[in-house]
Length: 306
Image (cartoon, rainbow, N blue to C red):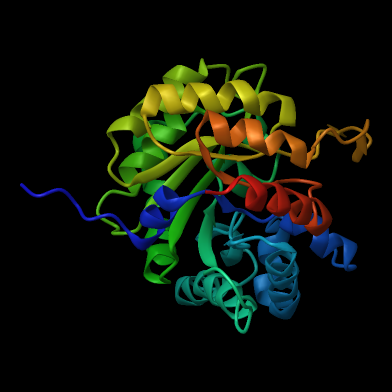
């Protein structure tokens, strides 16, 4: 049986590193949008789509080549609580992809790509459980939850699906089952702490299933401290033999009781050379990493890009 031909996105990865964007929600909040909602930034797909487009544009102008859509916390169930039916939710998920495409219009230089964000089940509960995992659901139940929105996002025509901030190896296996047959490449990215998943599994165990999944074009970590990345890059590359994706937070800590960030940032563009030498091919930032930091990171990537 012939192998599946590589997607355009996979071919681009093979040709050299790509720069991801940074934190979407932080920029929306800085623009004055209240994201204290169960839908988080996905609410603005309904209420202020032009604001989402503007943030994507800012990151593209800063040098990002891949925009991650505002669908991380989106779900049929979450929008239903706002009175949006299933057909309407599918349109909103498609709108997220369209806004990222529109943001790239007219920009010179390299091609821009769109990654449709798929957050973990815990993100949709909006109770912080995406940072713990272990929801009390079976793998089959998680697969059944994720499949409908994955189908809707795939139908919207993104270049890649970003299965991101996954806290648990069991949920990763459910997601890998759920993406089968969709015809869209995916990257799989775990939220980690102390060299383990948020649910406590060894990272080698979490990464391993991606090695055999044809849909997966990159595997790695995001929404973690920058110092977690170095070891994770080498491990992901060794365990899976695939390109690595990394986009850590700023390095500040979140105080859930005070609802505020603590400490200072440790995200630094100078780290990117080490990430790339270890096998990273998708590099960017997550929470509290803005266009200024992505501009610096993009300059570092350009400096070492073949």
